[in-house]
Length: 262
Image 1 (cartoon, rainbow, N blue to C red):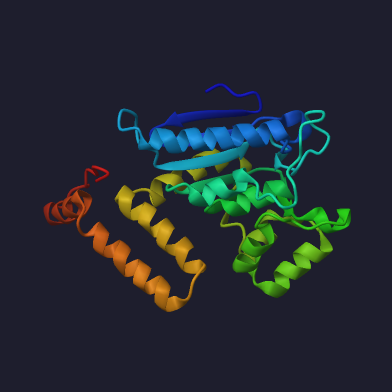
Image 2 (image 1 turned 120 degrees about the vertical axis):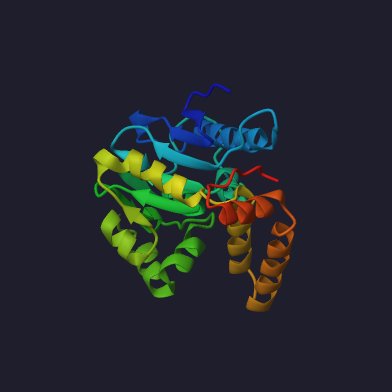
């Protein structure tokens, strides 16, 4: 599909989605929001299509060196409707609901809704030039689509309160220290570093990697006993796959496994 505010490509099983509104620092306009949802849904559909390559991972980045995204653009698209406070924004639901790992590659400002989207991804890799924050309190509002709750799970309640109440931007290094950025890497090497990271986390059996995402995310929202039972069921299911057999065979034969996705 062709888009006006994003770009997408699929190479070697890695889908790259680029927020492409550099004139507004990749702010989330209604058009960008809709196209991002369509693109991520297209990736999910492509992943299910056996005639096409399966998608190992998704990387989301921003055009230019100034911003991943500065958040919502309330002045864009004329009279196009903005999301209601009562509506959970679809683009913030999709990253955790996609079966494959989703990585946010952050270079520059990552603020407000932009940070909420990055927090919805499985991993956040940033450059030293990046600044992250939730400035909503200075506008008399709060992040309202999971950003606060995901921040709490990453940094703890008191630090999350400080970040959200103060509405300040923090450096990528401080965000890494706090725990809501996973790695900080030089700008000149960030693209190759992200690719190496994706290759590393997708080396194992694809079904096992997807099960790991599902089990960990599901466990965060339930009690320990229920989470362990869910983990047991997922592990038992994986033992019935051809990839489990291939992994054992490759280990015995001292070679790299050839995964079949089944």
